[in-house]
Amino acid sequence: MSAPATAAATEPAPTAAPTGHDGLRWLGRDAWTEAKRHLRIIPRNPELIAFAVAQPVMFTLLFVYVFGGAIEVPGYSDYKQFLLPGIFAQTLTFGSAGTSVGLADDMQKGFIDRLRSLPMAQSAVVIGRTLADLVKNGFSFLVMLLIAFGVGFRFEGGIADAVLATGLLMLFAYALSWVHAVIGLSVKSVEAANSGGFIWMFPMTFVSSAFVDPSSMPGWLQPIAEANPFTKVANASRALYNGLPAGNLPWQSLAWSIGIIVVFGTLATRKFRAVGS
Image (cartoon, rainbow, N blue to C red; front, side, top):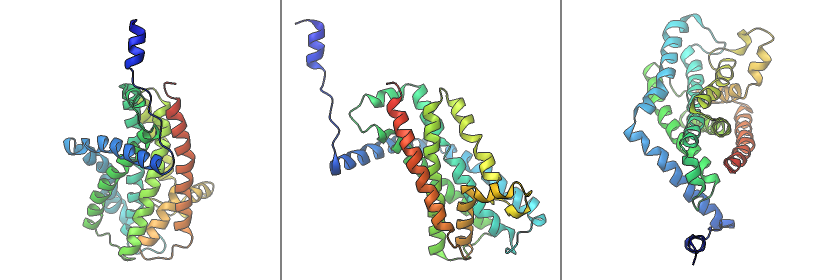
């Protein structure tokens, strides 16, 4: 028997992907396996969390103790109660950028090609990456919450509203991870992913209600800030944390997050399947 024939005989046949309920379990198992691969790095590299919260801690101290006395927000006697929900939203938003960098790094090292050759659900690679970043964002949020309590922030609206507010923030950050997934799968280097991941987040977080009321901005900038989905999420969480009427803001935040996941999740999955094909 010739060498090619021998190779063909010994090569395992490709495994067909399960469908239906078994397919979902298969996808969930593979996604969690991939997520654990990224999460195992945290105990060996705790500075990942430290660096993730270093910038928001500096923003908190700067705005509370340097600018806080000069900033007045209608309806808030204490600027900290207005500021900290915006800082939470910004921290989780910036934390979602790890998805683009991580995927670009795996692609650059050729690890994505190895994963594509395995009998696993292909979309599980990206889902696992986004889930791992969601867990890491949760750790960052806990650290920021301790800092916030240390400077005087309180849950004025009660625990239930605080849990709902946190859920909206985490879901929005998870949605943005899918935006970063598309970026990470579209660039050719980690450096490009890092630049492409952050360059649009700065205007999104600063041209918003994160730090000041949009009514204090120039007239032409106000409608942009108010239409910003980041503003919707920040305002919804701020109202819930402070026990203020939230109106339709939680539903608008939820709609934005789900819409972003559907659109960019589809794009990221198609992009991953196209990589190397």
